[in-house]
Amino acid sequence: MALPHRLLVVLAAGTTLACAAIAQDAPAPSNEITAAPAGISQDATFAFSKERWHSDRKIGWDGFLSGLRGFEHFYEPVGQPLYFESPFNTSGLRFLYLYHTFSDDSQLAGGDLNVAALQVRVALTERLGFIATKDGYSWLSAGALPEEDGWNQLAAGIKYVIYADHENDLVITPGVRLMLVTGEDKVLQSDTEEVSPFISIAKGWGRFHTIGNITLRVPFDSDDGNTVLHWDLHADYEIAPETLPGFAPLVEFHGVHYLTDGDRLPLSVGGLDYTNLGSSDVAGSAVVWMGVGARWKLNPHMSIGAVYEFCLTDPDDDIMDRRVTADFQITW
Figure (tube, rainbow, N blue to C red):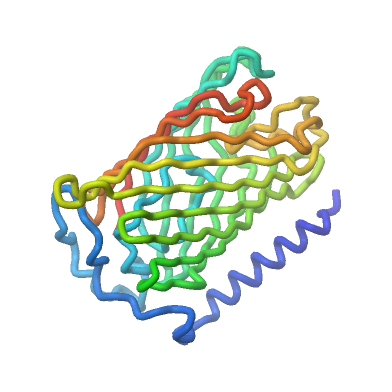
């Protein structure tokens, strides 16, 4: 089937972003990128140690692996990890575990889902980064489906920091990722290829930090998949940096809006952020959920986070009921 016009526009925008990022050699104008402080942010606190594992020496070229320094006092989001990409350009590994339950009265007839995954990020320059955000293994046990386990789809892309203001704690980063049909159909992970451009913004006010993200998921074939709009909002506050350094409670909100119907499955559930079912009766519907939890930064290279998430809209309308997401991050 021919690619829809909007997909061609999205692909062209993503290609332009990638080419511009790779081609850029000279420093950005002073009104776009302020001078970054040496090493980590002076406002950052950590539970056990402020000491770095390495001297952050130059490897290959400027910015390779080290990325954009000076925003370590922010706390990374935890929930909705597949599409909620932070605007910070870092290198590291993120180990993820997700436990998700389905409503008994939904079309999946109850049950649960367990996912274990590893995300990889590599700072190619100070502002250009490679991201691999989806992989891993799923254990699916839904009432309407046979109990199965199998490999997830793969998704990877790039992001580029177009604006970074250390003085005002503001970072803006667009990017784009591609998801391939590489998973196993028995766990609903061999559905459709899609491209997902996004933009992520972080803003801080002292010990209070916010991060927002908007993502558009566009299937290569509009019959096989639904076009989906995601939005995410994270807020945290470092409550006691002197007595409990590196710890911040957080609250997050996530929304999924189905913009088009597919023609693959006669369902009124779309798969949320886990999959893209190409359902024929979801256009115009939305799912909104909330998460509460915390992140704890152990040292400049390691942190742990966890959130408990619950649906704010009717859990019977899609596959979202309750979810627990936990991660362990190691950064360069």
